[in-house]
Length: 289
Ligand code: 13P
Image (cartoon, rainbow, N blue to C red; front, side, top):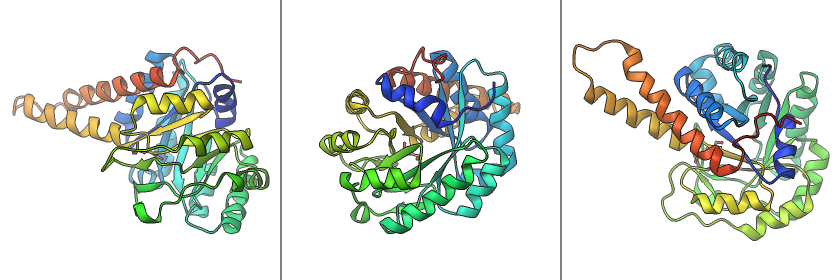
């Protein structure tokens, strides 16, 4: 199967009140684990690589891994660049074969955010690549981007319609109480703010910082019309904890990397399957718009 874009999967999800899970990966093992989980749930899936992950894996290698995975996949797979702040890097990723990118100009003021996000949309269109952008600032640490909690700012609903119209984006990340990484205290989502945004735009809305938010809260957002949920840290923790466990359990004379890494793939796959079931996208693999 060819890679799909956000345009292929999110409008349908929004209309039918389920969300597509988007999962961060940092190498082949977790990428494959994510796809296995999606296939087990018969769900479309978004594999996300941050700018830092692409630099770690190699840009063309990242595309190669996911195109290879998609080729034999029974479910639609989207390859999405997560939280990219460097427009030259975004262009390189689009040219390299990403089917979707996120331009994160959320730290800039409103007009600059519109201008930079629109420039990415204009460029990506020629490559049939979808674009997500962010308005308001999600707090926490995502890869090399750190937003101190005190400088995180919630999205102002009234800012959304003009932002969506002028940029032409395919999905919008908003800030309404979630943070990237593990929560230091109980997360409190501002459901009224989400409702106000959903009333003002048809653009699919994205929740960042899916790790640690009670599943009932995420489901409440999805029931209101949220269409994409990002999960990263939880998979990183499952990866590392499983690897640590295998290092302890396997005998010292074991040196086959596959013995260490197959359980890692399984652990990642299990979480992804559970999430996709909870997000309501299980069984929706055939639902490409
Ligand atoms: P978490 O790491 O908190 O799950 O957030 C992931 C994310 O939003 C990636 O953009």
